[in-house]
Amino acid sequence: MSTAADPSATETESLRPSPSSTTAAAGPSPAVRHAGAALLAVGVAAAAVNLRPVVTSLGALLDPVQKDLGMSATVAGLLAAVPPLCFAALGVAAPGLARRLGPITVVAAAMGAITAGVLARSFTGSTAVFLLLTALALAGVALANVLLPVVIKRYFPDRVGPMIGLYSMALSVGTSLAAATTVPLADALGGSWRLGLGVWALPAVLALVLWLAVLFVRREKGGSASAEPAPAHVRLPILRSRTAWALGAFFGLQSTSAYSAMGFLPKIYHDAGVSESASGVLLALVMAISVPISFALPNLAARGGDQRLYVVVLGLCGIAGYLGLMLAAGTVPWLWAILVGLSMCAFPLALTMLGLRARTPGGVAQLSAFAQSLGYLICIPGPIVMGALYENTGEWYLPLGLLALLLVPQILVGVRAARARHIEDEVVG
Picture 1: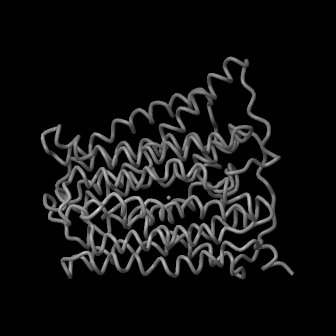
Picture 2: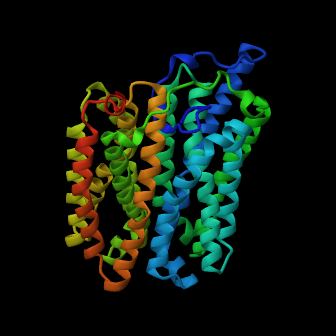
């Protein structure tokens, strides 16, 4: 939930700086450079805050949106599946756009798409138009999701770790904030779900203004804005790597769990007798768990060559959490939220493993592109199936049981992917 010039790169490579990116673009003076860097850092945080409220604010108000628009549970499941579909499709296009226009230009455009989509969807009375506008906002999310780490690696080559930490925490803060405050905001604004969703265009506008300012300061012009040339690397026959396939499956299964939870968890709690406001807070708790862990887990997991213990522990947390929701969602609901939140920390673990399973930056780029694209495609049916099961049974037993069951193969493929080996050793020779 990429490199600056490589079309197949993704977020993982930015977790560790490369020797070739140690020179920042020179500015007119140290004071101007520092001011520009500070502006860009604030822009990164502001953009990251806007990468999840498109989804989590809708999850908090899904009931009134469904009723007002006449939306079936199956279509609601489609809404939960749109994010990974956009990420799979546009994640491939983002590096090419960045080469032609420059990453800062594309991120600024992405903030514009988020602003327009979030604001406009709150005025429509059509389910189809609502879906299209949500897809527009998510297209912006997908582009920024891929390119923000590119910006970090290119313009903060000596501070990649702290900036990735800032990016991860801001993303988690935005997720939690939207989940916890959307319902109270809607209530305070007259009980309108339209205002409750539309208000999230405001932080997007702020991020857009910041990125337009960054764009003006940097005066970026397509690929020429790169501080270093595109790295050359050998194309690997990655389809022959069992580790690559295992990583793709692990990424897809953990994404299935994450997007299903973000889309349906407030409704699951509400159907169990928890108030709408408290349900949003519980979703916020799920997301808040990842704030400190997303920062610490990659460093811990990278210290050893093997990450199997983390895979198993996080998977077991998820099984316990979903079974608890299935059997007693209204009893100690905070405990199930914590367990589900811990299981969703498989996302930063997956990104970490993507960076460790190849020997070279070029290998990491190819592995990341393959595993994340495959993973997002795998997770698309999950939320749709959950919505269909709920619509046909009127209960959450089968959907939650399915999520708990899917964690078993997630653990199995994750254990395979977490072994200390490199894909080059599997495909070369």
